[in-house]
Length: 269
Image (tube, rainbow, N blue to C red; front, side, top):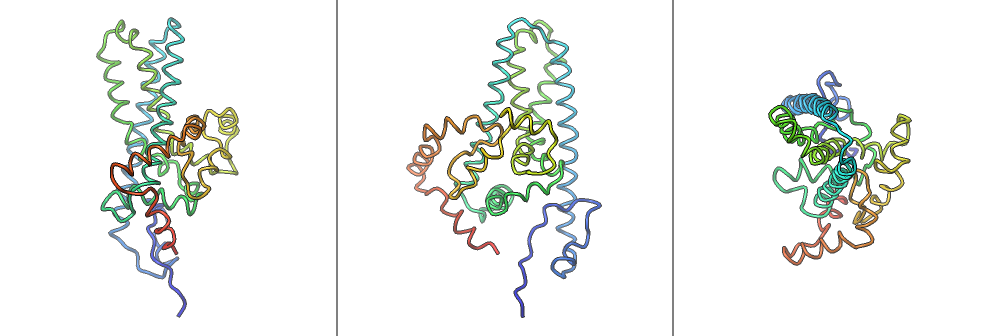
């Protein structure tokens, strides 16, 4: 008998998709329970994206309404600081998921760690995800801070809004770039069909460069973890930031970095 491929989780199933994928690929009966889970996940992602994009639009309009050129340097500094903070956050999350833990850890192993580990084996898989699947999780994360910002626009006096305008620009830039991190990451693995304006953003290094991110995908995947703009990768690489973080973590926990990553990769069919 020939080797039968292992049944794999189909993260791309959505309502209206190919309902017989299990039969087509493996000759198996459809797993209705799995499809119900995927339907619920897809619905959650749709709601998250629609709600998040609505909040981004409304918050941006309020920022325009209250804009003043006074203290413009503070506004610019706040926006740049928000983008850098988002880049740092993406690096911390990416470093943690790539470096520590196992896919066998309950709950977070399959839902959080495994996608990062699989990405090293098939880096272009995320380019086959649609906009909703790519951005749903990050949109869910930023709904609360964006909603809080809207509440403050509606409840605070205009004078106070002007006093804290630079801080609001920081929070808005942080939320927007965290929201778009997975999309930016996807663009960095897309070599065909990118809109011209996306290529311009990459060329200006406002978003993650393809050649820049490629450095991370050289085994053992131990550097260039920041995947929003990648601005901090140069500095962190020069400082040996991630290696120092790994040394501190190993000293505190006794765990060695990337212990499970290579072992798990060899088990993949």
